Length: 148
Image (cartoon, rainbow, N blue to C red; front, side, top):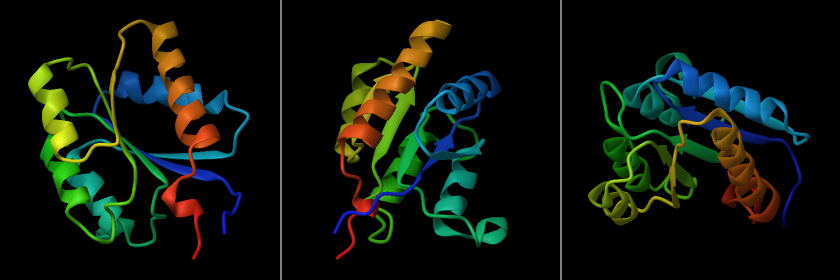
């Protein structure tokens, strides 16, 4: 059975400017979206595992993941999530400035659900967030929305 409710997104991003742009883009949405932010990969894993100060965190419906993160890079975070039977169904959208072929292929090898280049232009960045929203929230059925 599919249930309609607000969508919880976890953004794992260390660039304050990109965090602010993402927050603004989702704030303009007419959809019920809750966006939480952590600033490094290690905090992202702790959040997802509900460790320490995140013990009461809500498991996100979708993760937006930057690759170049402090403490634990995005590739390690991705591998950690996808190897965990409790977390692996959470869709992971890699949202990064890297367009290096080895990064793209490595992320898909690690079971990323999508790889999106983060544009530097403000309007293009907003468009990318709207496209992510349109596909992952309005079009797709997220695993967390299915109750058996």
